Image 1 (cartoon, rainbow, N blue to C red):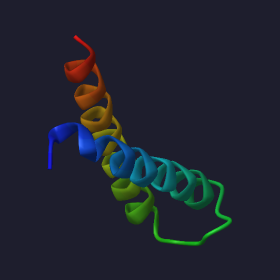
Image 2: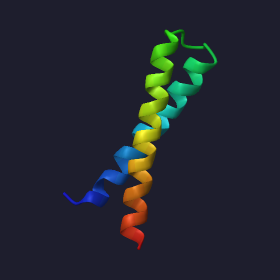
Image 3: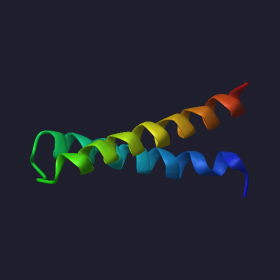
Image 4: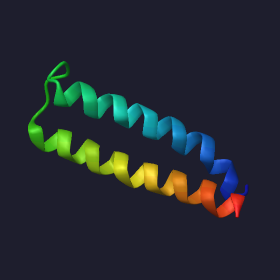
Length: 59
């Protein structure tokens, strides 16, 4: 398994986390604000890794 094989799963995970961050931020899904911050932080981390792999393989 190559590093580039992680692009698709990381993209899907990032998309799901973005949707969760939006839904918890708008209080459609009611969670403690602490969880909203955790989800948002995870979103940034996964998006950064996803983008980094894409940029690394396209250079």
